[in-house]
Picture 1 (cartoon, helix red, strand yellow):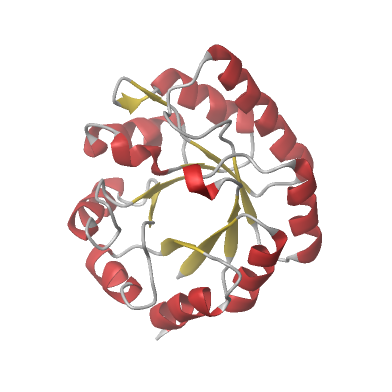
Picture 2 (tube, rainbow, N blue to C red):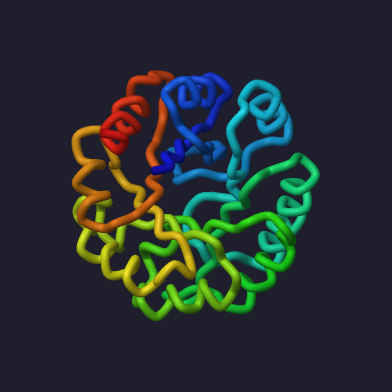
Amino acid sequence: MLVEACVESLEEALAAERGGAKRLELCVNMDVGGTTPSPELFRAVRARVGIPIAMMIRPRGGSFVYSNAELESMRRDLDLAAELGADVAVIGVLDDGRVDVARTRELVTRAGSIPVTFHKAFDVVEDQERDLDVLIDAGVTRVLTSGGAETAIGGADALARLVDQAAGRIIIMPGGKVRGDNVREIVERTSVREVHARCNTDEARIREIVSAVER
């Protein structure tokens, strides 16, 4: 099992690594769901942690429908992610209630050899089963989702269906109020191999999740 910890500071990143996280998702502005971190923050975290870092590529909070100027900003940030040495790029672009196929494919191509995670924008698409195949066709490596529910445990049945549909072609990574007291049930009901959880500066938060899935 791999536990990915969502962090927005060096202190949180260090706590997550101490807690046993095997990958970080680095962003800022978690009050709006996370946006692109600064190069300075990425470099500081890279210099102090030894685990892979997924870099959020999102120019603002709010809607996942972006203007041409915002998409150009995302392209530049993907180039920067490559320069900084990001291990994963995290994106999410929608259009009229579904995954924006053309722009997702373009951003995946722009990311080059960097694997791409499609973030929880996926939870507001109208038809997850339809759009999962869209993400697979676009070359996305992983999708972060709660199965369209408020929480991962609440969406466990939908997550299990997505895992079955994925059939190993894309990684389904549950996220949404994943905690030490529910992660075991999420894993057992869905057969996922990765989970995503928010980390603050208390390393015990991640350690409890890691301990639960490793029992």
